[in-house]
Length: 283
Image (cartoon, rainbow, N blue to C red; front, top):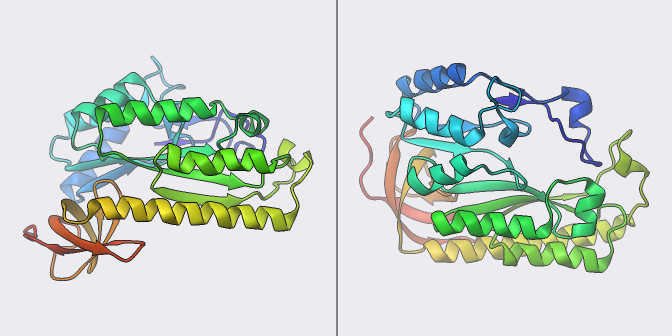
């Protein structure tokens, strides 16, 4: 629904390749969602380079939350609507209201955090600070307690000290993150970060490994909390489904691919839930 980016994070080359933010008109988006739903799709994901900036270049500057509300209202036959990665600096009041009031909006947000230390966030030229990220997570959980969170995090950004890294490491538990995408810093030629004092390569590698280990432990905590529950799950292919909060489910038994099926969780393997379908949805 959106391409390009108006922001200039010091590590990112995307704006140079894709230009400024451009939004698809709401009417076109609603029509596409309606067509997909008519074709039998049970879930639609709204995605973009900076999807929370959707609407800023359109007449009246509508917000992403207003788009979500419009889709859910005008396509009542759509069972599930999901958002892709969002910026931790941007979550509008309408989007928060949709999370609170619309069960068809899936309870999972993947946050573009990148770091958990304020000095590094400033040097990245991010638009949020550590406290902003924690506040956003708390606000969402206050209205939708079952929301799970993922995050992108960069290890070894230029000038990152051990203390700065520890702030990012602690954020995983403090924010209650469940799914991490961890990236060792990789300089993009022409970006400001490429000219900053680099962290030694072996240190970057170790920090990335520590972040990934923290992510694995966080995922296990999340999976432990799901055991014994019945989860409405979208069957992606035989033996594999996704819960509403994006948790991956390996299941035994039969279920219609593309259908939404309740599944009883019996355990997990450290990466995925293990479950069995209760009643398969008719094709």
